[in-house]
Image (cartoon, rainbow, N blue to C red; front, side, top):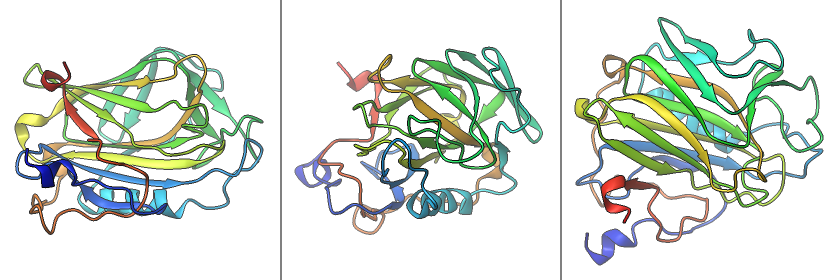
Amino acid sequence: MNAAQKLLVSAIGLFAVSSPVIVNPAEAAYLTYFGEDQGQGEFARLSSTPNANLARNDFFSNLVNVGDETFESKANGSSSPIAVAFGVDTATITGSGSIATVISGTNGFGRYAISGSKYYEVTGVFTLTFNTAQAAFGFYGVDIGDFNGKVTLTLTKTDGGTEVFTVPTTGTQGGGALYFGLISTTPSEQFTSITFGNTNSGTDVFAFDDFSIGRQEQIRAVPVPSFAAGIVLAGGVFGANQIRKRKSQAK
């Protein structure tokens, strides 16, 4: 990777990151989508999440017939294992965390649902295992980063390898919301499970809502952008850090 590519991602404001964002377009196997709305405190529920919604809309614009899990059908307090449905496909959540309910406002600690009143609340590690290989995944996260925790995603791929992402949140106050999505650009990068991690597990508690998945055949023709034209930067302080890391490089 040359110097220009290493400095590809830079900090330029506090708006949504318009998609797609790729660290190294010549080699990248995924398109990623990210938008963040800053929180206003632990007792303040955001009245709207325009930046997160923009990232979600960009993510959905490259897919057809996307499956979505909002958790509204789950009993409050349900914990591992939790069966979730995405239309024709299903998954099982195992690990820490449980279903929580907030009708209005927040739970007093900055967490709430994006759609409806239910969401998945967790501080540790949990895994979604899919019934069949997937090529796209997206979600909303709430109250992430006010205690310096970041979400990590580890994909177990169909070829037996793994792919690790760190969601680049910059939130410092409770009650913020974000959206993160990823789409495989090649069939060989499909995945069968995703493990969520927390870099400040035990202290920073996260809320998740509206999980969405898509198979390879549900992806529209998504061109991989060129180095010059494919990167749209707007918001979130990325610095020169990569948002995608191959496990083999993390030594």
